[in-house]
Amino acid sequence: MIDLRSDTVTKPTPKMREALARAEVGDDVYGEDPTVNRLQERAAELLGMEAALFVPSGTMGNQIAVKVHTRPGDEVILEADSHIFNYELGMMAAFSGVLARPIATERGVLSVEAIAAAVRPPIYYLAQTGLICLENTHNRKAGAVYSLKKAQELVEFAHSRGIPVHLDGARIFNAAVASGQSAKELVEGFDSVMFCLSKGLGAPVGSLVVGSKEFIEEARRVRKMLGGGMRQAGILAAAGLYALENHIERLAEDHEHARLIHDNLKKFEPELLTLEPVETNIVIFSLKKMAAEELAGKLRERGILIHAIGPQRVRLVTHLDVHRKDVLETIKAFKEVLD
Image (cartoon, rainbow, N blue to C red; front, side, top):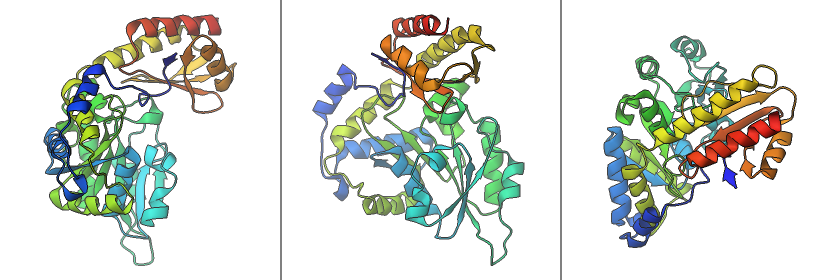
């Protein structure tokens, strides 16, 4: 099967498996796993921050950040289609006791004006804004990239009001490759960042949370509260290290494949579908004359797996296990079904 449901479905490459097998390990809860420590140091270096923490998942990383930055009763401003708001099971309320204040946007990019209007005035009987969360790239907005200029404007505004800003950077390296700027540049000024190893970078497990030394010290405590303290985790960290050293630049290939699929689907506009702009490795479109699940079923019969993210809305994600021949086969299958 050609699996385009997500970039989380990738399998470790042969060389990554070799790195897993050779990994030097220790007890990470004691801070004694040398491979985990190297991964954390490398992550902090790549993003230009003081420290990092290896966590099992992106959701855990985001929720650790929410917990550290806020106190119960706070509001968290975020985009209405963001992952933290839609796909993390209301954990910010359940665990941190905070309330989401979502703002709808066209392409996932919050403006300073929208944020300013949502920030609560300092009146004692109003919930106060404790945190602002951004997402780069934006999953439900077809992998849209948050520009450096807009992100920095927002961070500067938030800090002028004494509000911390967290970045859900699950695919931050896709944003870096697409924009031609380094991940370090894209996250400058953020108080914390989470990025995933198990999406486009192709590692089997894990994410990193990065920030100041004080933030990471508290984040380590919260990770333990959530059951995320791992022992000989160097076996997993070795895959992450390999991914950071070998799988970042190749993301451009995934972007090229997504554009190729997108461009071939354009021939079916506007009669059969409406495409959203493609910027990275995610293609999203809305069907007009067929249900998303029906299309998914027809493509499955032809050996293609896609993700129905709504009654008419479809998502495809390219990744390192999808090669050019797979893309061409996918385009052929789409033509057969849609024609």
